[in-house]
Length: 254
Image (cartoon, rainbow, N blue to C red; front, side):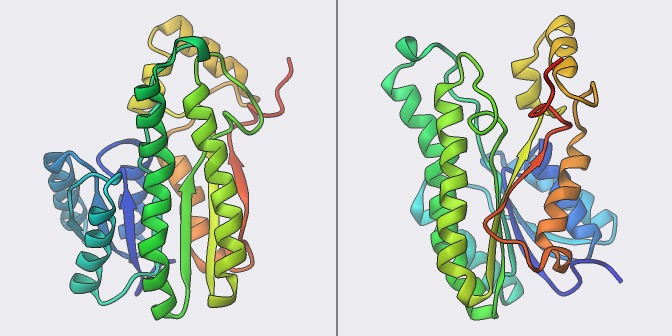
């Protein structure tokens, strides 16, 4: 039996990388999936791919920083599929890469809005729909950056990803009584467009790989498996967790 049969899931940041891989996996495991990002064509291509492989998905493009959009995304999900069980709030950006003294206020605010405020807005409107359903699973994409490591030039990114862990813990405490579990994944280096922006030369990629105990970066599909675990009943007693899926980068010292 598929792990998510009968479930309805929302995946943000689904046009590429971890979000896209997770949407495909959720659909493969039986969920009806609503995918969202700003790039409509990539979403439409993903929906077509999922349908071709026997799954069910619809696209709802827009800006996750906008509360009206966060509300409309849930409304679209309820109209299409009658409820909401899982939300993977994954949309994010590296933001402005510079030392703290050189980061602009506009860059700081944009990263905050994209990575942290969007997750707050998503959860604000997703949680009531899950409670109506009798429970559910909220999942956020945090990072080892800002949790087990500080990386020069990534102040805004680190601050927002650390903030997601705090948000996860508070939501888990608030929503547990209603049957809604709330967890965060903390990926290590992953072969995504964002990962390539950090390691943009063969030398940089080799260095990033060497930081991991496994001496490689992850495929998006590997990270998606951890999201599936948190979305499914296999993690039924997990909430408030910051789950490292980082190939050992947090413990590597040699």
